[in-house]
Image (cartoon, rainbow, N blue to C red; front, side, top):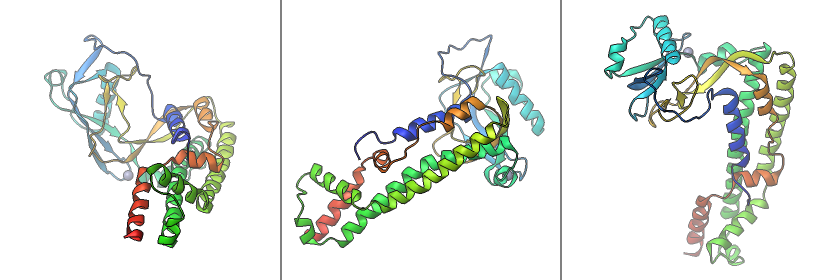
Amino acid sequence: MAGEPGKFKDQLASVYEYCFVETVPYAFFKPNPTRDIAVNLRAKEYRCPVCGKVTRVAYRYHGDTYFSKGKLAEQRRTYDALGLDFPTMGEIASGVPFVNEAIGTCASCAEKQFGRAEEPAQRAVNLAEQLHCADALVVAAAKQAMEASLARWLAAADAETIQQFDVSTMEKMRDLICAIMLADTAGVQEALTEYRAVVHHGKEECARLLTELPAVFTAQVGRSTHAPESMSDTVYHEYTVAFAAAEAPREVFYFPRRIEKQRLEMFLEQPRLTTLAELFSEVGFHGEWLEIFSTRLGALTA
Ligand SMILES: [Zn+2]
């Protein structure tokens, strides 16, 4: 379980983000009064046009957020579409709290509306999303299987078993835990086999669909209410970005989005873990396993 835990996952998550979430690059930004509008931005409301569900997400407050004119005009259009009164520029300038409005399909309506889409653009995006979930799930499933093998060993062990091993230091205990997990790998192997099948199918099918699609296409893409969002059309910077407050609802809403085929291909072609050793290394070693072990050890030798 040596190596770099989370190596694959972090890289895959950032490429997925580059493909489906992030829109503008990070850049130095200095508010320019002729170009940027200071807004006392406090929350965002997501409204599902299918079922009418409204989710209000409070933003973390860190002073004014700077909007580009384009982003504020976009907000005005959304307010108009919803029949809401858009504040005057005077009200915005005087710091009246502002709420971003978004019309996006909620996750449960999205599942019904485009979860089983046949049309290539949406299907390719759905497959990429499944792949993205599988990338995260394989590590969680492997960790769970490793913990189960440790629990099985500890449940079967008695004081005599433990005496055969030197667990006098944390390092030695750690080595023993790793040895126990590496001796009982059926559960991890199962998670890996399942993952490899999802990856194989997802990559192949998605790549085939991409051959039918133009360089840029549009599809519905899920976005977490906790994904940071820039209020500038061109840059991402502390002054322009809004973050959901920690306690705000964590949901996914779907919006139509332009997707670059090249970015999606890049996501598909990322290296993914294929061996047990890579999966063990990806999970890493968790401090809580030492606690589980010493608790059982304490109970056996008491
Ligand atoms: Zn809905």
